[in-house]
Image (cartoon, rainbow, N blue to C red; front, side):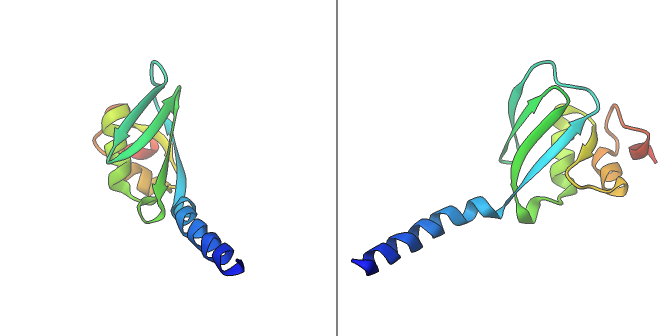
Length: 105
């Protein structure tokens, strides 16, 4: 019986493993969305409300400037994105309407 319990516990831990491999990304928008919305950007579901959008991103994509740029195509320029430094934020917003002063450099 204990072998069955150990096997079940092992299977349950494997099933839960992907949840621990995600990073919550929060983007602060320069211009708030008109109403709460759920949008899909690059196969990720973003929840946007006011000037904030959130999603769960696989760890390997968390620092992706291209993912940030794809989000700006849908919701406009971002004032912050996850833990991006100012140079990453500038690359994300490059060429986007509503750029912040920091991203225009």
